[in-house]
Amino acid sequence: MSDIPPPTAEEAWRAANEQLRRVVELKDAEIAVLKVLLEEERAARRLLELRLAELERRLGMDSSNSSTPESKESIAAKARRKAERLTSQRERSKDRKPGGQKGRKGVGLTPAPKGERTEKTAEPPAECSGCGHDLAGARQVGADWAQVWDIPPITVEKTHWLLPTPACCGCGTTTRAAAPFGQAGSVVYGPNVNAAAIMLLALGDEAMKAALQGEDVLCVDETPVNVLRKNTDESGQPLPGQPHIVSVRTPDERLVWLKPIGARSKEAIKALGVLDGYAGYLVRDDYKGWAQFDEQLAGVQQCGAHMIRHLAGVRDLHPVEQGWAERVRTILLQALAAVGQAAADDRDRLDDDLLVGLRARYDHEVNWGEITNRHRDWHDGNHPGYRLARRLKVKAEQVWPFTTNFTVPFTNNASEQALKEPKRHQAVSGHWHTMATLSRYCRVRSYLVTTKGHGIRAIDAIP
Image: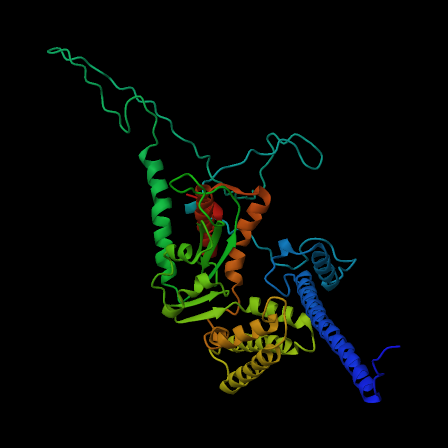
């Protein structure tokens, strides 16, 4: 038998209590680990939810709620827009004949007066249009007229000069006649061709820059284009950056200047030279490349169409939580309507109380959008609603100039429209071969669109 006495009741209780304590400590450690894993799981799940929300936001982006161009919309967005367009069209009456309706005033060329036209007489008809009888010797009962405007064929006069080379009777030296242009044995362009090229290349840009810098309001924008062979550096490597076409124009089409740049950078935009020293109003989007000129300007108008689309995009994230975005959108559209009505009434400013009320409502809603989204999670940082509200608050003075200066348009549609034709050209051709060919295209396009804005048809503008 063992000499160890059995534990007392107190010792047995303490041993059991110690064992229970160790079990509890182990369980507490397990629970702590599980809590950490649970928090990590929750964080990962929240991150996935935010990423899903961002993907859904991007999938829902189209030309109506973002800066996505129609050409890059999804198939579903294009189908939805087409369906909306079809449902909004009026149903054509079955009794309505195609073409212009009776009483409609036609639009066409105005006949040129005698001093500006060449008179010609057409060959008389040989047969009667009614019975087919021979009309030779028929009595003339009148004459109608028609005018045809056309350009005479442009021909290149190729003159082959013979250069006499007589020999001196005294010393026998031969003296060749001087070539009118260039050197003997060479083919060169004549002075008329060279003069036309110099005028188009040099005077065109400088004259356009000077004209644009004298305007009170300019609209600017840029768009990427495809160039097959970009310019190269000294080592023959293509220069970095994506080529763009820049549009600088007046709100109407009086002056339209298109210019290529090798990259969408602040340096490339500044190098254009057209905004150096410009002190008027600039209508633009929020790209920083244009913001470098803000301090010298009389004012900046942020493109209202961009703001309306961005507000619609935030509203679509959650119509209730982001209802402030829809209210701001409504306020801006009400301000635009008020400006239109005032202009129609031959007034050059809005009623002071009306403008103060619109601005106060705008400030209130934008402030609410900032507050309600300040701590709202998003997968990459700040919530889109917070970013937009913050931008509209900080840059509010660039949102409202159209309400105090009616010559400043609400949108930058003018510049965007000027870039539609180059984009259409690229959609057909695929690319430009070099920056030089792109530059020539821009110069010719600028000339033709500007002359059209002055009421000059292309057929008359071509020398």
